[in-house]
Length: 245
Image (cartoon, rainbow, N blue to C red; front, side, top):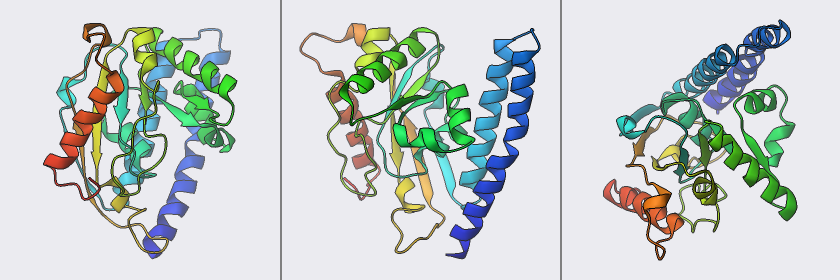
């Protein structure tokens, strides 16, 4: 419990401190010399350092395999979703700038929601079909504009349970934008928080496996992109003797 209290205090302070680079961004935006590349670099570096520090203070050890397989240009990362630390793990340890297709509730978080918008995240309201479709269209436009995105096709955290079925259509934005899909397998992230009794944060050994990218245009008509990505992640979980399989 002491580690959890310390973590949340650190989380709050670190998030407040992140307003300093936000001021730099606003100065660039208001200077008349709106250099988008400079802004993107500040956003990527701040997000990576913030996320990595949040993971590191848990005492967890992170192993990333296959980072060299990530192609140049925009991609759609598709990953299993085990726990709350999956987003910091992605930001801190998977190379490259990226935004998330995130639940609408995160838009209410002060400071964090500002950064998420700077990262080109898209907020989706699953209770409103029309708004959900608009959000997915925006995500596809982000990909076309060159911004990588992350989606968790299960739609919710597994918390150590077996890999859930993928939401149909969750990967359709890659087909619409004609960008590669990169399957990502997250192993044991739930052991940092969700797998503990009570409200505790504990060190865990987390493995992130980045698999070969899949090009939607190369698939046959009878092949389903969601099924292919899910089978890759499922096999990675089996090979690593993940208890949630």
